[in-house]
Image (tube, rainbow, N blue to C red):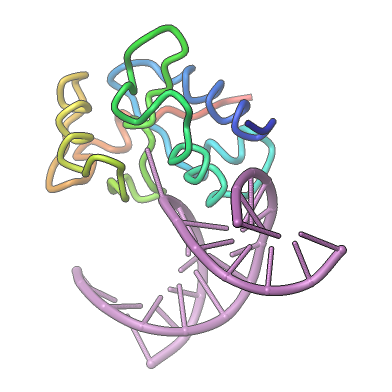
Amino acid sequence: MTQLQEKIWNLCKKVPAGKVTTYKLLAEAAGTKAYRAVGNAMNKNPYGALKCGYGKNMVPCHRVVDSSGHLHGFAHGLKAKARLLRKEGVKVKNDKIADFEKVLYTFKK
DNA sequence: GCTTTGACTCTCG
DNA sequence: TCGAGAGCCAAAG
C-alpha cells in the first residue's frame, strides 16, 4: 500500500457515523489534489468494501461521496451504500445525500 | 521510465 | 438540467 492511501484511510476513519465526506475534502485533508487517487485507494482498499464499517481498521468508504453529495460508483452498488448510510442516520434520496450539507464532515484545521 | 487507467471535479454545450 | 469533454494526481502495468 502507499502513503497516500494510508492518509486517506486514516482520515476516513475520523469521519463519525451519521456523517459523510467527499473525495475532494479527503484529498485536501491528505495534502493532495488527487481526487481520483482517493477513490482509487478506496476501490483497492485491502479491508474490502463490504467490510466497511466493520472491524478495528474499518474504513467507512460508504461515508465518502462526491463533491455534490451524490453517491458515485461503489463496489457493491450504490444501493447497499445508501442503505448503510441510512442505517447510520444519513438520509439518502435517490442515490444521493438528502441533507448533504448537514451531514457533511469537514476536516478542519 | 513512460503509458494507461480510475469510486473525481470542473467547465462548456 | 443533463450529457460530454478536458484537466488533474497517483498507482499499476
